[in-house]
Image (tube, rainbow, N blue to C red; front, side, top):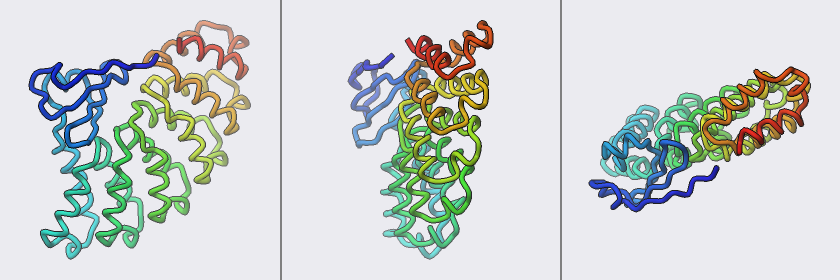
Length: 271
């Protein structure tokens, strides 16, 4: 199911800083603010007028950046202004992205203001909490030597950067179902993340987990087999995981123990 329901900010009283709202999943909306930033919010947040308030993500981004920099790199008004300006354009997951990246990179990769600004600008692509989860699980799954430079970390960030509500859960499910030798390089990890970029809901991640559990190992232990599963699950809505779980539980094993049978079930649950 594709959501294309758009509202102008005037449809809700008081949302003076919002330009438009786009429904992207059940109870979830993408908000474009007048300053050009975007947020992913719930219906409850909209009704409470908790939209286009940049302070929570703004504060976490600035805090993460200044905590990771030597004091002399942010002790002037001009330096702090550069950090604030870079952070103010970030989205929901940007602050988490900066903190995770600086926690996992050697200090010499982010101890200058220019390196930090570059990292913050890359982290703007992390537009949701699910994208931040994607970054965390991919970095933790890879050998350290694949993300211990600023350029490698930025590549991971750019790969996970998405406003998808389910990309993190989808990637996590994929990694749980693959042998480590299938995702121990950046190029292999890129392939996995790319196959999950269209995962619109957290149900996509549950779908991947159910499919992996319902198949013999030899039907999902290659990168090509797993990407077929993730791409199929990414097309489903919020209930695709629960639908697949019910179907697998109700059928005899021989009705879902081949990859083609499982993909057929996923397709039916995605309608």
